Length: 86
Image 1: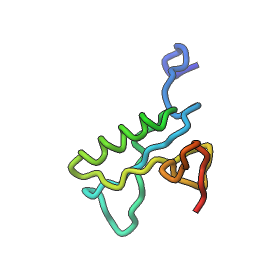
Image 2: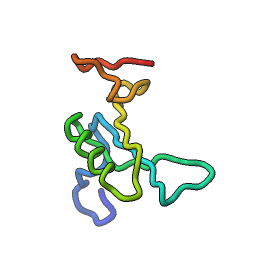
Image 3: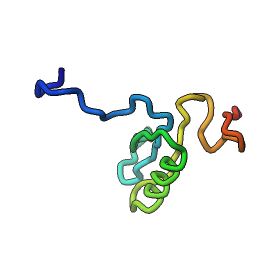
Image 4: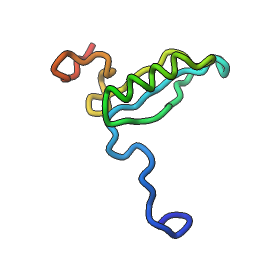
């Protein structure tokens, strides 16, 4: 049950493969922590999200993390989609 007593909403990261992160240069302090913009189930959608990050005036360093292969970023994938580790 939700807080309003209705059906659970389909929000959040459940079942989403890619997580998109960025840094906010307007909020830098001694310890730079990434912010999570959101999640998506396709790499193409994640790349569009990174494109939006690059156009934001204070956001930078957009990253796509493949949650099925936690040891690598999605940009480290080879042509057949299998994760590469560094």
